[in-house]
Image (cartoon, rainbow, N blue to C red; front, side):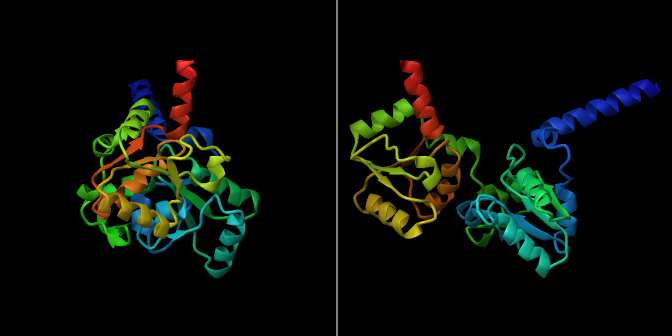
Length: 260
């Protein structure tokens, strides 16, 4: 009987661990559960280590943004530690996102202690605690406002479909990859416009142009992940005629290699 109980317990633990693949990759990194963070949310410093654009779109209430991509990430965390002795909890998008683990590891390597990962991520938090979540700077309250995978898929096109629609229409094509992802390469030379997601003035200019001229928006990023956050902004702006390239430019190149 004891053997069966132990086997069942081990199976349960294995199932739980597989839900968080990063825990296997970074077994030395301490983590905190969603329930623990909610209970202690006023007693810890919550740091969102994603991009500023992702942070502005959807975030945990009272979280501050220090992007892991910042060159001075450790210096910012160290300065925060000097100001406030409380435990620091870092988070990113979800259970398959590794940024929270990497952030804790970087802090440890740079001598910054008492930093833990909340590795269930902002999406699980928004579903479970919408009253403590901000969507576009407004309290979420209703998790039904979150965009589902099905809703996202309605606005996704394969690279081939994306190219066909572009060729058959006068839709506005936007490349929203960041500075580090572009590597100087354009795939629709003479047709696309480049805009960074944190440049809202320029982004709004193209959105308003599309609405005024009754054109659609065809948008692609590096791997099909950044556009998921952009969808909230487009919907909030009242844009309905828009499509993303499923898998981004990575999928586009993979399709080319497959065709060759």
